[in-house]
Image (cartoon, rainbow, N blue to C red; front, side):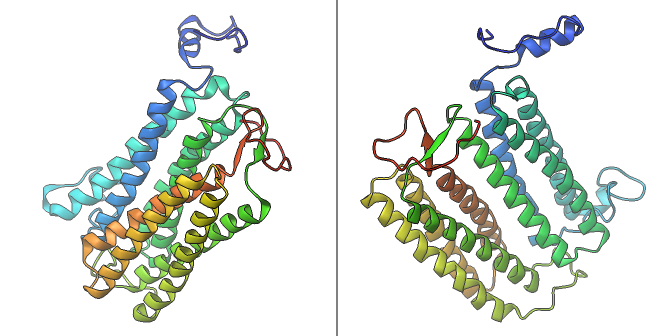
Length: 328
């Protein structure tokens, strides 16, 4: 049932369409939550399948784009397992897009009251369309490692936006207040920057390594062994900063403390997997796991950043009252 304050649907709209619009929620309900979570899970999953394409040498399993071959939209039996893996990843892109579109439609009637949710859902949808095009460019350029790397970073960014949607959909409309000291917020933002730097160096390291996605694909020309060490420096700095964030948040009993612990846990697993793969010849499963964990770290970091603020109505007593308000 629409609330008394919910926007009415114009009587000039055709009756069938009007009924559909009236069915859409005017506030975050179970439908929005379910599809938002499905969209997030699908975005993480497609990073895993994209990694499988590269790590199994299936990057050119479908040698053309948008068709799989010049004469076929789908893979053919002659293309073998590589064609199946590559086309499967392309098919999943369609599912991811459908889920993102569903979220946009579900928040349509609350696009004014919950403007941030509507904008975030649009960013995800537009990002998926752009990613499909970038994916085509990677095929047409013979898996250029820099374009492949950009493709991955963009995917991680979309995962972070999905995580932001999950956080904001559970926050009330209205102004928010900083629920932590300014120095702590600065520390969290600095940690976010180091995480981004770690991911970028990780992408460059992978682009110099053996997993090119196809035997004929070129590498970025950097020394992979040197980059492994360079990649580890911001990684350990990230771990040290996160440890400080965890200790400080618990000492100050800040709202972000449990998510800070979750971020530290993801990083610990990430470090363990990174050390294992570096010392065991970069096994495919470990590299793929490392890729997915990086996306989960970005998502968790997003939650930590957004939970630095709380609703002005339900704000903690004594929290600094020094932030600008935003519409939810």
